[in-house]
Image (cartoon, rainbow, N blue to C red; front, top):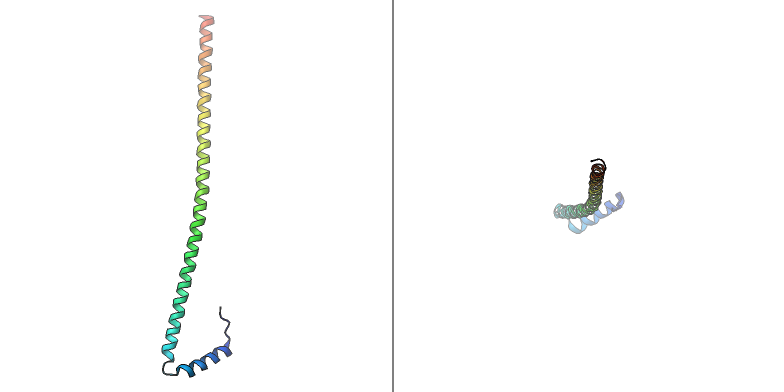
Length: 107
């Protein structure tokens, strides 16, 4: 994040010591660290919120795909059942027709 080496850190420490003074330096350092912690926690909350939104978007896309697959498979199942019922009806009609012809011819 911040590329601060030892010489830069030493310079900032001396300037802070001269500007703030040794008496108030612990209070200033505590407030700076509290501020940095608050910023980090806000950044992590923002990051987790964005991740949650991305996951929800992916999940909703997956749900849509699953629903499409389920609907297509259900439709295919029903079409198969309808074809089977039609075939059974044709067989029943054929059997009835053959039986009727048999009765007419031989009885």
